[in-house]
Structures are given as structure tokens and as C-alpha cells.
Amino acid sequence: MVLNNVLTDIKNGQFLPVYFLHGEEPFYMDKISSLIEETILDESQKDFNQTILYGPDTSIEEIVNIAKRYPMMAPYQVVIVKEAQHLSRNIEKLLSYVEHLVPTTVLVLCYKNKTLDKRKALGKYLAKQKWLFDCLSLKDYQLNDWVVNYAKAKGLGVEPKAAILLAEFIGNDLSGISSAVSKLEVLVGEKKIITADLVHKNIGFSKDYNIFELQNALSEKNVFKANKIIYHFSKNKKKYPFAVTISSLYTFFTKLMKFHFYEGKLSDQELAKKVGVHSFFLKQYKVAARNYTKNKLARIFSYLRDYDMKSKGLNNVSASDEELLKEMIFKILH
Image 1: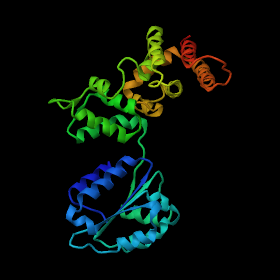
Image 2 (image 1 turned 30 degrees about the vertical axis):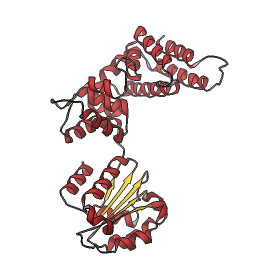
Image 3 (image 1 turned 60 degrees about the vertical axis):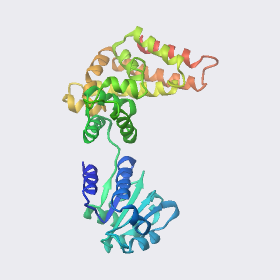
Image 4 (image 1 turned 45 degrees about the vertical axis):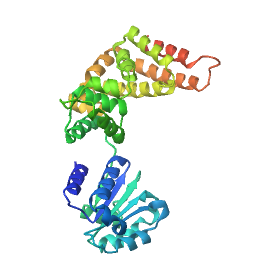
């Protein structure tokens, strides 16, 4: 991955004159800017040669003026602009600097939750020089491989199920997954393997009572297990809010509807990508598809919308979330 290569180059002392980091995924943006901040200059050189600016409190003119300075008793000057997206209206003015830059300046711009227009002059020039870096959110089906590769870079192995659980439990939050892996790193012991049991015990999810186990029980139409889980949910309302349960089930059944449409038309790998799950879960979806026809799924979507409204007080006088949850799960199963 390009962004991993950038981190490796920085660690090896190979620096670019400009790093324009843009996109909606802050993980690599923060990692690259922090590594540059910590690596290029030693503490004695930073006072005169390292400047941290913030988009809301600066201007392109100020950035350019600082970037044009030469380092004092240091090989480089480092200029880091955080929250650079606040400069979007005038960002094209940066072109005059990048076309005639100072080679001893390392300029970093963190353009969060926005993307630079590559059709305009600045974007075209930065892309041509390979100084423009896309920090894009991963697709759900890419998360599992990311977990494995990230752990491997830290010298850790990951059981396949453990990687899947981390990706499913935490979701598309690379910073959250990174923190979880760091937490587990201290607990893996001599084998240096993250197991599914370690994930269950230490990442704050009950092994038997969580939304993924509920989805599994519904997939199998296991009435006893589903009722046992929702009873646990109803006794732990803060941990398992009804609104979150509805949202998670809506996502699950939407993926199941996609599975119905594409099953038999694509390979397992293509099917998993199209549905938005890891191929490990296809077995579960095959079971669920036998238990829920397309017509039944259409009714389930209606139930979910109905109970979402009832949970907000519409067409509901006195039923509690606990009662609504039981009714909804009964209708889904029957």
C-alpha cells in the first residue's frame, strides 16, 4: 500500500518536499504527520526549524512565507499544517510555492474529510509529482486483510476469526482497530498470536451476547438462542440501545437481500465483495438465504421501519423498548 511505503520511507530518512494528505480517513494522515513531526528533527533543532500551523488560524500566504525560510543549524525545516481543509477556498494559491519550492523544507498539509480537486492546477501538479496522497476509507470487505497486515507489521499473528471479529466489532475505524491491536499486543504472550478468545475477553464484547451472535441466531432461525440474547440486551439497555440493534439488523438484512440477487452469478470472492462481507461469513448468509426469501425480507424491512418509529414514540402509547424488541424479533422469526 502506498501509504505504508510512505511511512517506511520516512523511517528510513527519505523525505519528500511536500506531503498533501487528503481524504476522509484520518488514520494514515495522523500517522504520517506525527512520524514527520517526531523523526526529521531532533529536539534541539525543533525550536527554530519546526512550525505547526492550524488551518482556521492561518493563511496560505503565511504558510508560503514560512515554507520559504531556510533551516538554521539543521538539515531541514518542517512545516505541518493541521486542519488544512479550512483553507479550501484559497488552496490553489499554494501552487506558486510547490512549483518553486525550497528543497530543504518539508511541508505537510492534513486536508481532512475533503479531497483536493485533481482537475485543477494544484491537484494536477501535486499528483504529477507524486506528492498527493489519498487517505480514503477502506471498504468493509478490505478491513479483515488490513487487520492482518497491520498486526503483521507489529510482529503479531492473527487468527482468521480474530481478524474478522475485530473488523466486525469495531467497524471501519482504523484508529479504533489500531488501539485494539495495541491493547492485545501486551496480552498475546510468547506466541505473539491474537486469538478470537483474546478479542472476546478484552475488546469489550460478550462472547455469547452481541449483535453478531443475534444475527447468527436469526440466520439459523434459532428461536431459543435469539430470545436468550434479546433478554440479555433488554437487561443491558445502555450497552445495547434498541436504535443501534435496529440499525445493525437493517444493515444485515440489506446485505442478505444483496446476497439473494447475486448468489449463483458470481464467485465466492466476488460475491463477498458485492455483499460487503468477508468470505468467511458467506456460509452464514447461505443459511440465512434459505430461511428468508426475498418476500420475507421485504416484510422484515417494513417491521424494522415500523419499530424504529415506535421506539421514537410514533404510534406507540406505552410499550417499552424491551417489549418492542421482543415483538420485533418474534415477527422476524415467524
